[in-house]
Length: 454
Image (cartoon, rainbow, N blue to C red; front, side, top):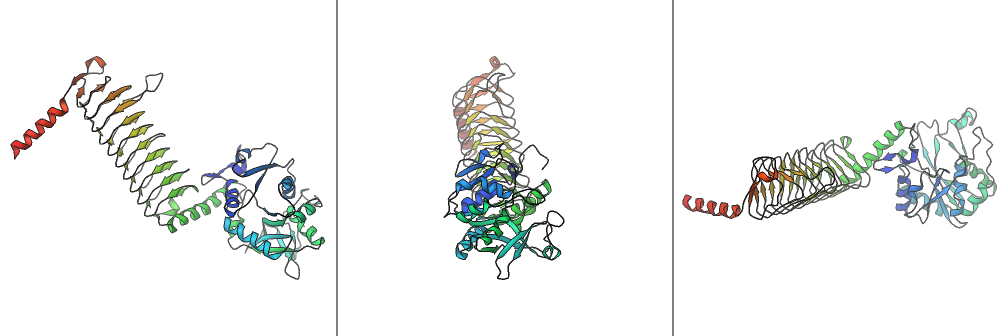
């Protein structure tokens, strides 16, 4: 991988590579999951949540890896062995392999696949009765005969074993090969020498075989995983306009009748409700989106977007943002660590940070919460049905009461009583003028004009 990051920890659709076969094993119903690690224990973060770590003292081959985990299985157990760098195997394939092994009564069952071009893979040599005799490696010249090189059935690296015979065979494996390693397929002829049968279980999907050893293969596997993820959502009732131009992580959930437009990225543990429209060019990371919401060309990290909320275009929602039902974060709006009440609108060109806003408030263009004094961040409280005029700056900590107004171009540094109009001709706090009772007089005047008009 040419990376400081351990290969199995490279991300694949929102999960580290190793987490994919672990998830498949868990979904297949494995009673015990063991991940074999090196002495550096770089996979230690996977420990817990039903995963155990076994340390392979030296890098001495696949049989050595299984030996490191031998303490985790008993003689009566069925042991499934997977490659950590082959992430596309799914729970269905694992269940089928386990069932085939149990039905066969064999000591081992090897998962195989037939390829048009088997170059680079170990060939599966069958006995006259159709059982598996051995696996022939093809890594070095002379490993396999010319006849064996014409075999198209190959080893996938996935096995099912009876625990007792496996433990016995592992003790007899030697490193008598060009690489000087202990190969797990070498246990197969040992089991046959113990008069036990070895069977094969043929997989149908060649993607189950795909392994990752470099970034080119990572991209190839990612493309397959992305296609599967999109197909799963589309079959569940989600419209993905252009799956090839859409990125969706494995743990994202999406409700039916949602539309995902091209060049969208849905990452992390994002959860999207029913009947949502996600517009082109949107990125949602660890974001919750409620039913019937519309998110257009927006970027959101760690935010909660409620039912029937409108976001964007060109909006940025940062961690801790809550947009409650029917609210709006419009064009070129940035919101951070703020609770925006139901029906409240922040239509355009505003920054709202560390604020609590009531219901049905409207913040005019270029409303800014100045929440940082150079030392600490302060909160701003804005009530319900508040109307701020354009270019209002709220200097936290400050509170604006329900039904209050601000004048255009104002710097509000003192609390505004409910129903008042506050404004300032300059930037100094002392220049602020507050007109109490403004909302009531405004409502009275509006009622009078309506009466005179009729």
